[in-house]
Image (tube, rainbow, N blue to C red):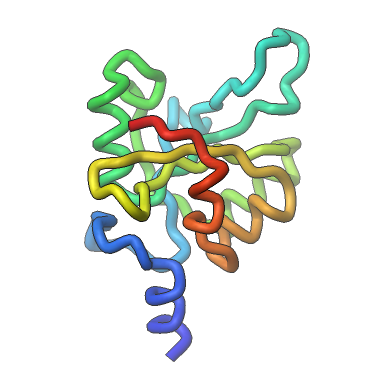
Length: 142
């Protein structure tokens, strides 16, 4: 019963596209070698507090992003399905911010992105809070 509940509460956006091996708490992450691609959300070269890995909600968000930004680090990355638990562990290695790239809940071809810190990021990763709650504060990429 819990699985069905999760799907309906976190899967409101009807146009997500998931690979067959996808599980409820998975994310799609771009990697260079063993390391997640880092989004540099800062202008000061010495302040990395706003840097963090990007996680994508599904294959559709990845495809929209890499088509829109063919020269991005993400476009040249190898992608891996990564569990929420694994991403949460990155906080123990010093990660302070996670960048979420996600399908616009209102526009089927839309893409939103935003960074979340600490507990808020962990709750979003574990899908205790839906990313749709942050849609109005997110940056529209497409």
